[in-house]
Length: 330
Image (cartoon, rainbow, N blue to C red; front, side, top):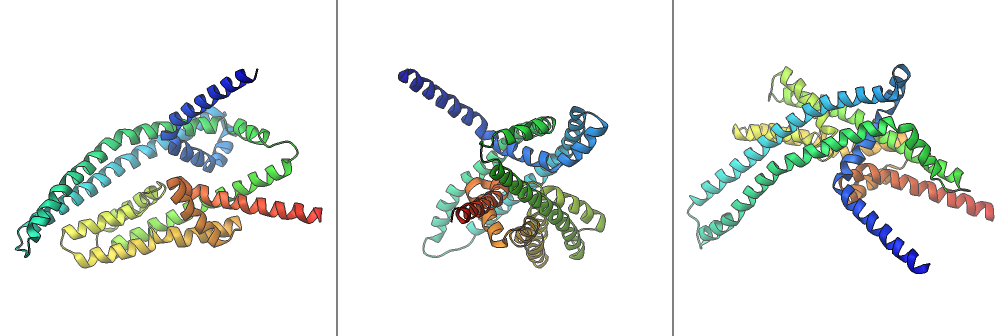
């Protein structure tokens, strides 16, 4: 009997390991699909009262597909231009530096350095091209999971409550409530800050005379959309504007829009204003939120921006519960 249990234990571990290896490459897509489904759940619940749950989920998924198509096209075009511009500028600098008369054999050292650097740049450009199909596959999983989570939202909620161990229902409910409050605060802070980023980006591009006002309004929309994509955020817009100005030879305005964008659009507001908004909504300490965001991003990648503050909030709830129990015992 014992040998049989060991065999079945090993089989179970192998199955779990293979399941993890299967899901791991798609974990980010599943995670952000769950977060977005949670964010639009109030809309889904209201819409479900007029039409059934499946049709409501289908409508919201269709809207998301249209939005994803716009973001994907813009993302590919913007990143393509950035990669091409960066590659061309580097190669132009290499060609120019090799024409200089440098002393003490520095010319030969530069040639050896560039002979190693050029293949790396080419490999980087190729990796970007090959990453597009992977992104599209992640997008398919993201949309599928978004629809599935909305359709089964009530069942998922029921199962989460069923997983709470017996005798600790009160603590389990408290932890779920704290996680819910923190996640709502993160989503609201993200939404408010992203809209503000879009407005500031419009004012920056128009105020510095980089684009006309209609184009600046389009940049506002792109800034808001990109700000919902972790890792890219709004910096990709002001960086594209700075590269454009550099290629035009306008160094002063390129530096000005870079400072303006980094300070008021991204990344500085993400680590100053956002923790304040989340801390106020979730009734947490600002330092705890900031540490959660930075430490979470360090440990889990972009997912950690959401996971980190939630985990620290749960730790705080557990410590308060432990103190309460110790006080009762004494």
